Length: 279
Length: 168
Picture 1: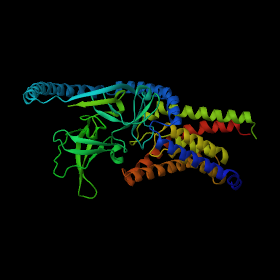
Picture 2: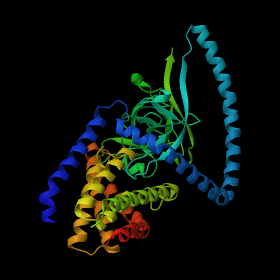
Picture 3: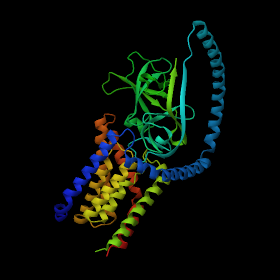
């Protein structure tokens, strides 16, 4: 052992440190992924896709046999919800017509939201228990860039692109500890920050912090992106309030948000490559 | 002493086996959640293989395996696995040489050591970021270690079979 350290120890440690520093610097300075990281992502993409396809098929089969009773109950509950939503939609149509008339009378221009979407499939889910990320099969070859938002088919926010390669990208989901988004409570219009929290990440939830002091939140309140600063589109649903708690200091409150997306059942998602909010 | 050709074949066999284990993991264990965690194989592989090889081979394997993991697995630090698996594989080799005979028990303890090194770095990175508290992180680390070590009866026999095949 001593002989080994005398002959090779310092060299091996030096190589490890140089490689570690190089990886860190490449990660820090690269706007897209470094060459090595990009190459590794391109090489592993087909294997990840195959793995995800096979494990998804197996999971589908096991769920098919297991969830029949639960599906019947869910079906009944959804039928009731659809009836309520239809009633709400009829009311919303009336309100929209009234809104258009009032805008015309007051000579206000309509706000228009233009989203440029790219559909993507999930190649891989986070292998590590310490992060909550997804790998998608779109990259710079499809004009995907870092900080692009990713939404579900229903328009719910899934996460934000954190790394991008030639034909792959990594998306940090909204529950990851690195996530931080400008948010707005849809009912009241109050602003806050939606951020990941390690304890809540394990439960598939995130935190709504920096709440205004006099704010009274209700369970089920929708929280959406605020769009302030122009980094992300506004009105993307992040989640709903499931509870309100007090911080350790006892002075400030925060809310626990439950995302409306079921990350485990996602297969196809949409990347917002560009957006324009026209007033 | 192995010839260069045998050495090449041995490490090629190790690489193929490691890839196969990780592939099987992504098909099956990756979707299995026990106690809120998914089994994580790389520290088992680094610890087990490190305990089977000499110091130099273990350190080089840990370095290369760590770089490959850093390039493909997201972590709080960009170089986390490079540092962790180099140290873990080397430590495993030292354990096998000076403390325990290479075998299942040695692989088990080396794997635990690998997990501890990886989780210490994860904990430090997240504590510095200020988004996590120490108790939940320790709880996750313990659960991850316990759930992942169940895969050791698969990893150890597979890797040690290659080692036995090429050990004179």
